[in-house]
Amino acid sequence: MDHFNKDDKYYRAKERIAQIKKFYMSLASFIIFIGFLATLNYYTNEWRNPWFLWAAFGWGIGLFFQAAKTFNFMSLLGKDWEAKKMKEFMEEEDKNKNDEPKIRF
Image (cartoon, rainbow, N blue to C red; front, side):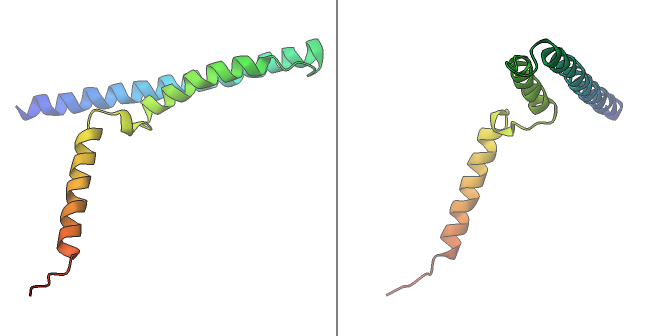
């Protein structure tokens, strides 16, 4: 049974590495291609209309979301968010109850 657990960890780690490699390849493509478009933009109209920024902005949004997924930036949107918040609020309430002074008349 432990053998399957190790295999699962191995394949999850391998998949995670593949996601990271894919992100860095996308980032490299972004830098190269946007650099090419910026150069083309400069030589065609000398920055009077920097149209390459539109391509950089659109692709950049997609790259941002790919990075967020790859590096777990958006833990708020994850599966465990609600459970973590519930636990946090319950612990906070318990702490507040214990900190209240107990006065009896």
